[in-house]
Image (cartoon, rainbow, N blue to C red; front, side):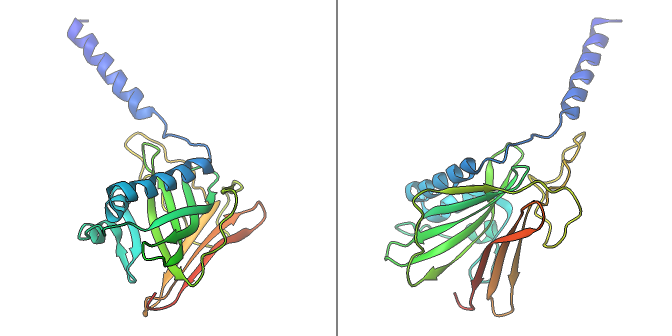
Amino acid sequence: MTAAARLALLTLGAVALVAAKPPLRFQPDPSSVIAAEIAFNRLAQQKGQWTAFRETAAEDAVMFVPQKVLAQDWLRKQVDPPASVQWSPSIVYVSCDGNLAASTGNWKRPDGSVGYFTTLWRRDRKGRWQWILDHGDTLATAREAPEFLTGKVATCKRSPRADGPPPPPPGGKPGKGEVAPPPDESLVWSADVAADNSRRVTVKMWTGSAYETVIDDKVNAGS
């Protein structure tokens, strides 16, 4: 066999090994989501509110203004305000496979008004957290902030879904030669929007015997 032929075989073998490499697996780590939230807020203070939202959103992320919009399309047209809203998570929920998470907490605007937020996060192919849904509402009085941030991990669930919608696929479709991981239905969510743009965002976590509703946000029309 010639040297060129051997080199070609080695190259093909290397390509086959890369193609056979399984998709990344991640530990369900609430602290990584908290870190992503803190970095998100810091980026908003340093580079601008909508810039931070653009740089951390997935391509298919959605938000409400108050109508439901594809976030990247809407954010592309926005100019950063002189000062950004500030926020901090209070509690984080993570799916069993570590690819989906929900965070909720308080925000405060420069004018002193306050409110809450809920953000859904999904890991991309490189393991980075990107938000896929962001929403919130104003409050007359801020929710009491916990002394310590809390993180909870869902119990693993691989059986057919009992209720609730399926979560978005973590990081999109598997690449050529990859095997998609089994679906993780331990953390599910829904965002229902009415004709008047009122909405309800819910997150449910599998406890081992049933789904527990851990986030249930209701936003009135015009908010």
